Length: 104
Image 1 (tube, helix red, strand yellow):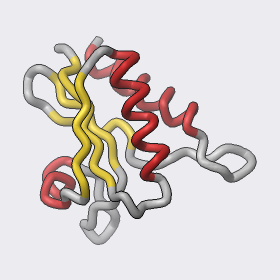
Image 2: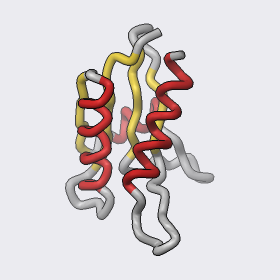
Image 3: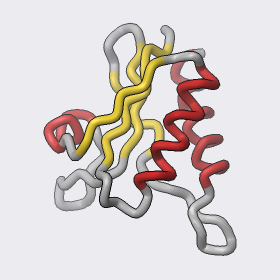
Image 4: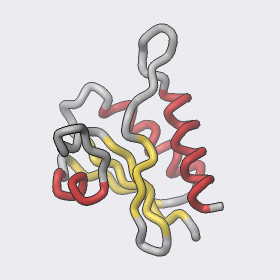
């Protein structure tokens, strides 16, 4: 199984939007795969995304599509550092580890 593309579902107005876009672009370059950015695609999130206790999806969420057509969430929550600021490096590491575990 190989990684085919990254899919980010986000919103321009979300505070974590820029961080998720940066992570998506970095992973896309590092893995040499395509990326797709969907804006507020709640039907996609309903089908593939993580949901809260009420069955509602949230933004942003990052997915990987593999060459067998399977779509898996790889980053749905931004980790925060000890300074309580978003930790993009840790988020990228987490996403990369999930991808490696999926395609190994």
